[in-house]
Image (cartoon, helix red, strand yellow):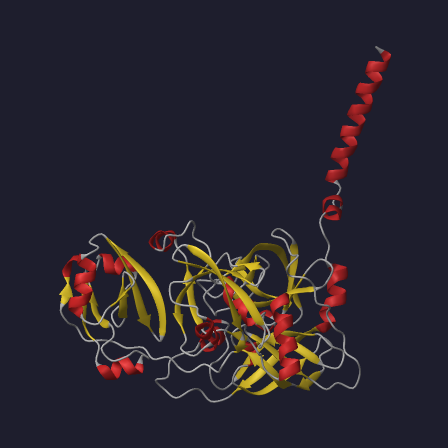
Amino acid sequence: MTTSATSTGRGVVALLAAVLLVARPGAAADRLPSFADVLARAEPAVVNVSTVARPANEEGQPETMQDLLRRFFGQPPSGGRSLGSGFIISADGDIVTNNHVVAGAEKIRVRMATEEEFDAKLVGSDDKTDIALLRIKAPRPLPTLPLGDSEALRVGDWVLAIGNPFGLTQTATAGIVSAKGRFLGAGPYDDFIQTDASINPGNSGGPLVDQDGRVVGINAAIVSPAGGNVGIGFAVPIALARWVVDQIREHGSVVRGWVGVAVQAVTPELARSFGLHGAEGALVADVVSGGPAAKAGLARGDVIVRWGDRPVQRSRDLPFMVALTPPGTRVPVTILRDGKERSIDVTVERMPAEGKRESRAAPRGGDLEGWGLAVESLAPDDARRLGLKPGTGVVVTDVSDGSPAEDAGLEAGDVIVEANRRPVRSPAELGRALAASPRRALLLVRRNGASLYIEMER
C-alpha cells in the first residue's frame, strides 16, 4: 500500500508540474520556433527597390503579363515611382529581384537596411521566369544572403518572407510551404512554391528563406480578390532563379535550348483517342518546319515520354527539360507513335527570338448543327499568314452555346486542319469526317499561331 500510494503521489506531483509549466507565461512561447537569429543575419541583405517608369505604351496596345503584374502589385504602369524588394547575392553588389519590379524602368534606386541609397544598373532580366539581376557599386563589401535548395524543400516546412510590403521596410512574415510545383499560367516555366507566409504589394522580388536563413524562393505573386494577403502567395524556386542568374552573368541574357515543338497535356480522353495506356507524357501538337524536332523526324501526334534519362510525366515538364539543355546537345528522346515505343535523337538548338502572334476574329458562316459548329473555307492569304498551305483547313466562325463544340473548348477563329487524323480542306470534308465518327472526333486546331488537339464528344 505504501509503495502504491507513493507512486500515485509522484504521478500527481508530475502532473501538477506539467500544468504549472504550461501555465507559465513564457513556457509555450519557448517551444515555438523563433526566427530572431535568422532575421538578424538575413535582413541586412534585403533591399528596397524603387523605380521611375518610362512613358506608357501607345494607347490601344494590349497589356502584357508584366503590365498586369505591375498593376496588380500597386505599381503604376507609366510614370511615377514603383516599389518592390530584392536581396544581395554577392559582396560586390549583385542584387536579385523580380523582372516585373524593374521592367520598363528609366531609373532604378536601391535602399539598404542602413538607409543608404545607390543607383542600380539592370544587368539583365528574363520575363519568362520573372527574374532580374541588378548591380550597384558600394564603397565596401556588402552583406549577402546564401542560396538554399528549393528542390529539398518540403510541404509543411517553415519559411519566412522578407521585404517591403506597402513601402514598410524590413518586414518579415512567417508561414509554411503550402504546395510545390504550382502552375499559374503566367509563363511556360511556371513552377511556383506556394506559401501562406503573408506576401503583399511591395514584397515582390524579396526572398523567401528557410529556417537556416538560406533563400529558397523569390516572392512574386499572390492570389487576392481585394489586393491584400489571403494566405496564398507564390515564389519562384531558387533553383530556377539561380540558373537564370548564371545565364545572365555569362551571356547577358538567358540562353535556352529549343527543339521546335508545341506540346499539350495527355488527358484521359486523348489517351483513349491515341490508344495510350495512361494519361502521361507530352503530346506533340505541332512541329516547327525546319526545326530540330522536324529534322529528327518527330511528328504531330507523337507522345514524348522520356527526355534523355528523365521521364516526362506531365507535358509542362518538357519545356523545363529542353530549356535547361545546352544548345548543341544531342538528346535521345523516347516517344510513343501508333502505340509503339521508339527512340529518336534530337540535337538541341538555341531558342530563337519570339515573334508576335496574331489572333483572328472570323465572320459567321454555315454550320454543322449536330456539333454546334459553323465553319467556312480558309482564304489563301489567311492560310499563308497562319503558316498553312492554301486550301488547307477551315475556320470556325461560330460555336453554339451548350454544344459539344463549346464543351470541347473550340472558339470562333480556330482553324481546323485535321479531323480524326485526316487533313481537312473544306467544310464538306469536315462534315464527312464528323459523319464517319458521329459520337467522338479528334481535331487538330490552329489557334493564335500554335497547334493543339481537341476531342469533341456528344
